[in-house]
Image 1 (cartoon, rainbow, N blue to C red):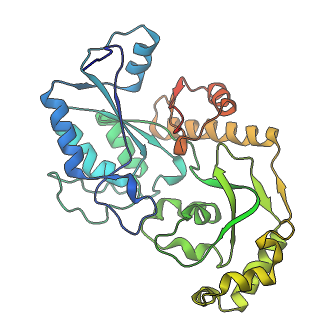
Image 2 (cartoon, one colour; image 1 turned 90 degrees about the horizontal axis):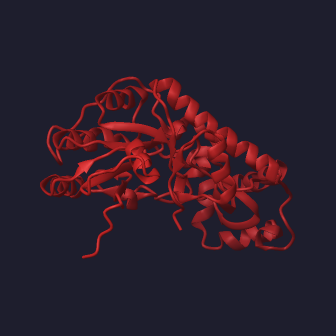
Image 3 (cartoon, rainbow, N blue to C red; image 1 turned 120 degrees about the horizontal axis):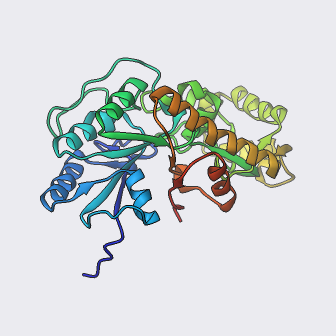
Length: 324
């Protein structure tokens, strides 16, 4: 097999734990057994993990790396990274990078127990790491904390209706609740947050936060829609198979007859918002963990040339590629 020894492979993970059937992003979970097997195979083949600073220097041509070097990263900062991944990395003498979204960091202080063996059942493993756990993993040298922005959410980008908020499991749009109650974002895996958004709330066309020019629909229009749904029974309104026709009959613009009034963010406003998010996420991580933060992973892989320039302006050395 052909191999270019200049290339260092990067293994990218999110959650390390059991598949959660009620979670909108269940596909992001890698089983503990699979992750342990990968580390064991890397260790047996003589691979050594390196950090992003070493990778950056290698790609810049100033630091040769052994051909059996590998980078391991985690996105988002899930609690199971602390519970399952850190003990396994420690066992094999390996290290990794975790890209953390600051608004998802758990605001509790108690350091929660880690698994003592691969696959050991650990209660209450859903959720995100807190600052104490991030600091402990950073101090140990097992996880290097870098930035994954502040919000990792989605915003409306125009008046085109794509769906309506209604009772479902899993909830396909958990970010509606994140935007409504950002203080509860770290706990969305542990509680049903659909109640934070009124039933009947329109879901318009949307995009990842750093890519979006944000559309803010008229508040009076939204209030009229959700108020009418509440009058029709709230959650029970959606038990009737004809709810779509009833809703469109009452509000014709929901079926394309006219447009929903609202305001679209200007290009200048979007750039200012994104730059602020890039800077603040880095500042928060540096201040809370007393360490430099110079590397960035785009939430959802959403990136374009404008935000690349903004990341450079915000002081990052390098960043991940687009998901596309």
